[in-house]
Image (tube, rainbow, N blue to C red):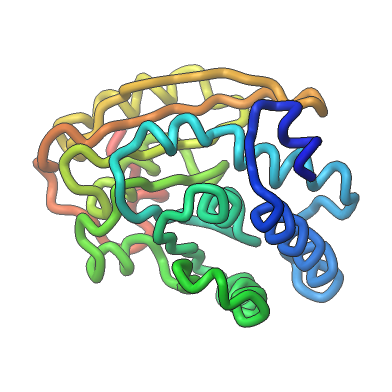
Length: 230
């Protein structure tokens, strides 16, 4: 694990490597009973889950200090690898309770991850409890970018960052999300493209919350997906 990640410029210690390895194998084992991931091959999962998560470390390290939340975390990616390496207080959020229960089971086996929590709620509901509670929001392949900036906005204070991991976003997605600066307070502050060794192309788009949202957020559950603002 260490040698593999070092090949891509990711430095981790032996304890972090053991946790990353343990989580990946736990996910693949539990996947036989609970639908956590479509990827069942270890080598492919290492690339598409662990490496893919950690390749956005530069963006996470550039974000303000403070807690991180991964919305739509699924089996814990990208949030848990980022938590393990950065040691940020981290919330793994997903509406699907079975997935969150699996993550909680992993936490029970690894008390050293006591700075992490796993919660089953919709992002809109959770934002009502933790308004401006996170310095960093991460989301991987969760929704279109206009939806993501709307969901992230109430979770972030001024200066907080949304880091969106996308495969191949639609050509107008970034432009449409940029139109929501007034409504959500988030503006595009960075963009990077990279390719995984398996050939998949990735886009990382970073938004900074530069002002308070003009719109009262969050809206009712599901509206961000069904009736996006742009």
